[in-house]
Image 1 (tube, rainbow, N blue to C red):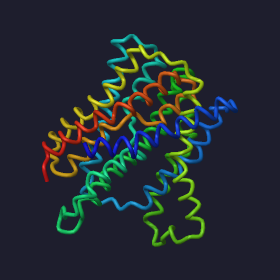
Image 2: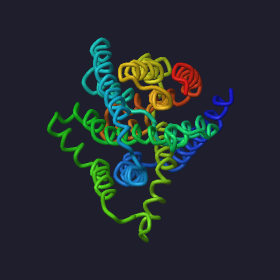
Image 3: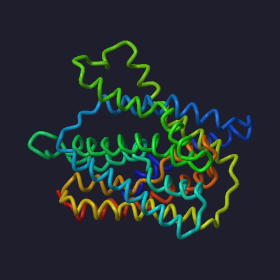
Length: 320
């Protein structure tokens, strides 16, 4: 119950409050959602990714976690493609469906959730690392892979239907986020601490602004969206993201022989709702934006219930 109330009060209510603000602002001023999505994808997301990667220490023993996260992406891509074939979706809808289950909210939803779960356990994992630090390091691995793939592969999928493979690849390479990932890793090798530079606070300001601006943008998009509450494809996507995601993660964790906190975090994070960036990308590249926005809304709301079960299952199956 405590975890459920935390998710409700610290994630669901604040998220929907900002989304509702976006809806109200759009009803009053009729904002351009395409401009807002560009601000997110070309300004806020790169800074968010850069700061998170640069400020996080990633030990070599996290390679197993990296392997699992990449394989989860691949399995969800195959699963989504098969569902698209069975449902006889066109190319655009298939790619929108694949994006909705491949990419999940590992940042502004996943990080606070992992923090809550392990902040009350001040024990040591390896004789040196506290539970919380270890769990957050695993979650940052998830965050890096998810951010990099969403702003690369996700854009490729969203734009492929209308422009073909070459055009989609070109559009994916124009987004700055992947280059900021590479820059962050390269700059970590230098014997200088960029956080001491005068411009560093500017990066922090931009990173901290991502969540609010992305949610407001989501609200504007929803204000302009025609809802079809009986659309079975929305609920199929939500089921795939919230239920099948943890199932795939559980199987991979067993195959890799991962135990303890690492196993728990990988399973729990795989049950997070669909990433808001999937809706922003769908808006930017006009690839079924109504479907993408509805999936994000429904998945975020229902995750307050499903994640409670996923957390209980993960902590019971892989005790520390």
